[in-house]
Amino acid sequence: MFESLQMAPPDAILGLAEAFRKDTNPNKINLTVGIYKDADGKTPILECVKAAERQLLDAETNKAYLGIDGLPEYGAPVRELLFGADHPINSAQRSFTIQTPGGTGGLRVAADFLKTRLAAARIWVSTPTWANHGNVFRAAGLDVKQYKYIDAAGTGLDFDAMLADLKQVPQRDVVLLHACCHNPTGVDLSAEQWQQVTQVIQERELLPLVDFAYQGFGDGLDADAAGLRTVVDTVPEALICSSFSKNFGLYAERIGALTVVAATPDAAQAALSHVKLCVRCNYSNPPKHGGAIVASVLQDPALRNQWETEVAEMRDRINAMRQLFADTMREHAPDYDASFIVKQRGMFSYSGLTPIQVDELKNQHGVYIVRDGRINIAGMNPTNITPLCQAIATVL
Image (cartoon, rainbow, N blue to C red; front, side, top):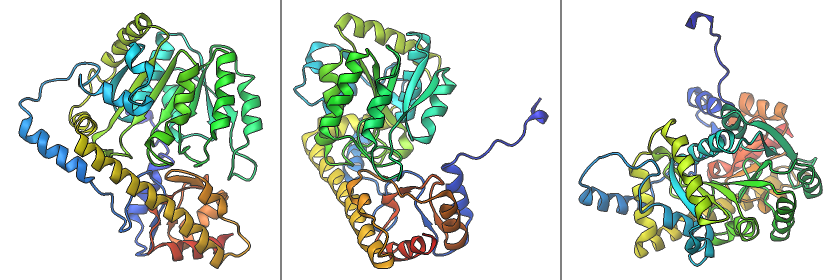
């Protein structure tokens, strides 16, 4: 049966990472896969994570299966991080959190729940959005539609077009929103724009699915949650998929969460029972280690403070690289205005580079960028910034 298969195309992002590994150019630069790197080009293990692991190693007594929804102590601190410690949702029992294998696992469980339990037919995503969103939702059987997001220049938000599209979304459809650090563009909504989007969601009785993969990488842990909190303060139901790959550096542990907000405690419990069934026929129950690290850090005041400091350090480095990139580009391409990079947030930015320019960067200069022009700012450092900007100036 396998003889009928043709080779599948490589993943648009992970395939580039494989090509980068095989490239023998000693000066190659990788700005593709969304992994944080420090000034030395390494992906560090956070000190708070190592401290939590040492505690867990000493205290752990078994390797038994977790429940379908994960560690019992995991959900409450995750919701406090999302909504704030004193938010009424946390005391009203209108929400629940399940531990998932990464944010992607949370998205797939959410998609299965929407398709099989709520009979949702369509989900609307921004143009552009994370490359894997469509794959995950279509695999679950959802029809994926798009609303406008980025402007014609490819470097800013076309909010009027976005709002006009959202006003045309059929009632009771699902709308995917990026809480902060929009992937792939780095272009986020302002507080006023979040208010307007939330008003449309409420008026059209849409169900928001908020992807929250980069909390803390934009302007701060609470600041980055402001848009999400605007939504849940107004709309009675929501799904939130969050990830700890980036802000905990736990890429290999695949640790995320699906949090569901319902209108009543009874509705929340009913939804939880169906979400568990979706998990059971997928991966059955989540792995333990990553969830235990996150729960330990968030519940220990000393580790929590250390974590917040380390997140701030990663965020500050990314923002410093944005400024350095804009300044260095001004030196090598005076006619090219890269100030938009400074205004964007998170690890990613839309550079405005064309596919032809991206191909030339890879083939002629060993600079690897996703073909749509998305660049990983965290891949920049003081050592590679000058050759990077020189290469970009050459292809402009």
